[in-house]
Picture (cartoon, rainbow, N blue to C red):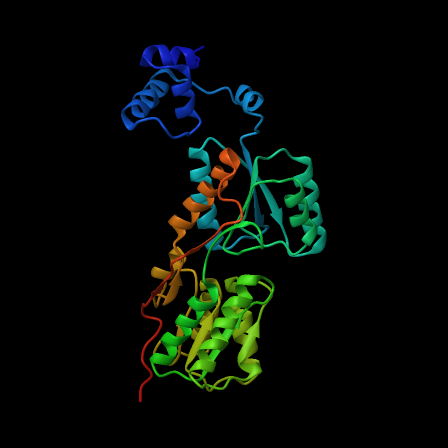
Amino acid sequence: MVNIKDIAKQAGMSPSTVSRVINGKKHVNSVKRKQILKLIEETGYVPNKAARSMVLRRSFTVGIVIPDTFNMFQRQLFSIIERHLDSFGYHTLFFFVTFDDQSEDACLNRLKAEKVDGVIMLHEIKNPAFYDYITAAALPIVTATFRYPGFSAIHVNEEQASKDAVMHLINLGHSRILMISGDGFTFGRQRAEGFFQALTEASISWEENRVVFVPHYTAEFGMYGMRELFLREQRNFTALFAATDELAIGAIRVLNDEGIRVPQDVSVVGFDDIEIAEYMYPRLTTISQPLSDMGEKTALTLHRQITGGKGGGKEQILPYKLIIRESTRALAR
């Protein structure tokens, strides 16, 4: 069976250089790195993970906390993160969490039982005991799409982004604007706050019955939220802001069922820019989060914390874009 020494001998390099390449370390020039990787592929060499774990006192395992039914945006982000973790030599354990206290307690107990080098959170847990354990155990952690004080975080400015989305509607002449959002998690509250800020700065009054908060951010609850607004006799409106693209998609389905055309009768803006947003009809105007950059930075930040203790507690706020498509148009005067 081929080992590191065999690879080093064939490459004419030291075993330590080969080891640095295998473990994703820097300080190896690109020519040598390519030569070593080519030899690894040709010889079929497989690193002994058990031996690496014993020597480095690491499990090469990362725990990822995700909701039990994660949405399209989280699914896309998770795929990117996992690909980058794999390039660093990690495999992943999934910690699925639902939206109740019992599920969060079970997640914490399982985390205590498993040996992981670090944790990535794509789902916000409410129980402070979870974060207390992470802190006490000095476990490297990165939160993606939200922040928790003292931990590394990768996200966009949710309030400003949603404010920009609503200002787009206002600049098109809309003032009778409804919102479907959620208040169960930080990002939902922040996106709702951006909605209110935009209306306030434009001197547009708003009424509570023009806003619906739903428990989940899916298309199903977008339909529920839109129907609830109709039950409140909210018919005299020209625009809708939905806190996620999936909520927007569900709302548009109900609008179509009611014979209300998008954007001829009502303009709709979403948030996230999931893949389907560009291919649905009409194509959805939305806030685009930098998925590729977010996924790469999340994995890299955790890897740096695990290998060198660097980057802990840093907050990285990434740029976003307002993507204007066919679901919005200027209000006819």
